[in-house]
Amino acid sequence: MTWADALATLDTGDGAMLAVIERARRVIDKPIALLLQGESGVGKELFARACHDSGPRRQGAFVAVNCASLPETLIEAELFGYRPGAFTGACRDGAAGRIREAHGGTLFLDEIGDMPLAMQARLLRVLQERQVQPLGGGKPVAVDFQLVCATHRRLRAEVDAGRFREDLYYRVNGLTLQLPPLRERSDLSALMAKMLRDIAPGREAQLAPDVVAAFATYRWPGNLRQLSNVLRTGCALIDDGQLIDWSHLPDDVAEELIGLPKPRAVEDTETDLRLQAGRCVRQAVSASHGNLSEAARRLGISRNTLYRKLREPESH
Picture 1 (cartoon, rainbow, N blue to C red):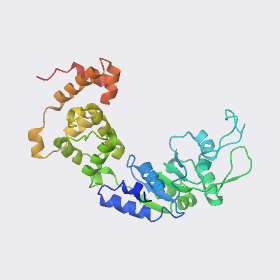
Picture 2: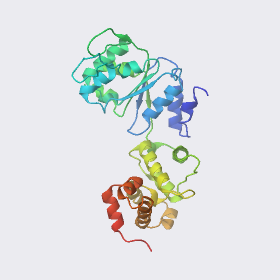
Picture 3: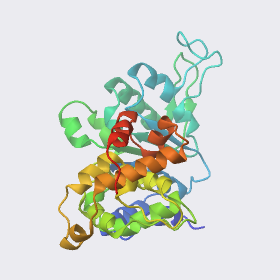
Picture 4: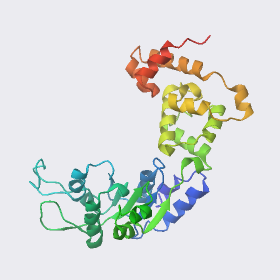
């Protein structure tokens, strides 16, 4: 296996994505911090992990921290660790902290644009001194890691607005890579084929042609994360050898797709979505042996939506 293998798996034919991959390849073996920017769901953590797996630190840990999901009261202890008894409720043995866990590997700070200003100052000190000071005092501990940060925000604008430290911005922005949103990518068909192989290996799952055409015109607000969820739901609802069609899509996505402009050939062959969805609901209820909660989970819809679908007249 070569260092480029993990990054190579992300190349499914889109020129903009390939350009990002090639730029990353040039720096993954150098002490240059990466800043990944892009909309929510474009695969920033997936890309960061591929950089780690393709680099010289791939034998070390890949430590991911979502700065937006941690309460401000906990992020300091989570990142920097703490000594025993450092604060009320602290673990009796203390904790090393995520930064120390990344020693020898990669530290991935997702949504760094949401990090509180006080924590930004502490992180800057760690990056400058290459040492981390646990809460509660004690001797500073040397750390060595590759830094990859990500955000859906424009950090330069956050700096100008006073919400992000300018000195930290230049520390984390060794090289900025902008990941393209799904709606701008030219490799949707190849990307979906790869996802289907990963989701259902050996099943040769495929999409119905009219669904493929509709997907190509959809805006995909949730990007790769949304597409993956839609395909995963479709694979769960089909039998072997069956195409993923309208009845196998989550309700919200199917309802949006059905209203999109479509080529004339698709309009001529499109069947009634609601009737197909009704059949799919009844199949899911049967497969769940009448357990409506399980049927709703399989379909990716709420129980209320399931009840509404069950009340609709059956197709003839």
